[in-house]
Image (cartoon, rainbow, N blue to C red; front, side):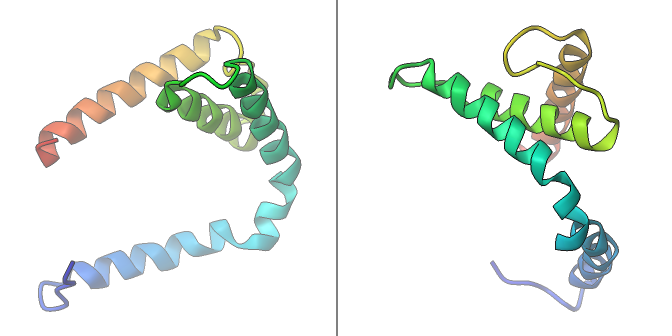
Length: 108
């Protein structure tokens, strides 16, 4: 892909990246390592239950992401990777709506 600097798109993206970069600095992320490990281990256990059979990965990855974000950002303990969680279900619906909207915008 070619990046056009004349249109200014690259400049805006660079500015946004500079704003976000401190949030993802390794020293800040260190405090979340235990949460990352816990949620990832839960996913590995769930995948192991499949016994080597093919698994639909998108819902599993979505659950992992949601579980991690909820624990890190709002300190909400959820078992959405292993059982139904009402709050997680609402988040899935929001993600679904967003995916439909972006799909329409990008023609996917």
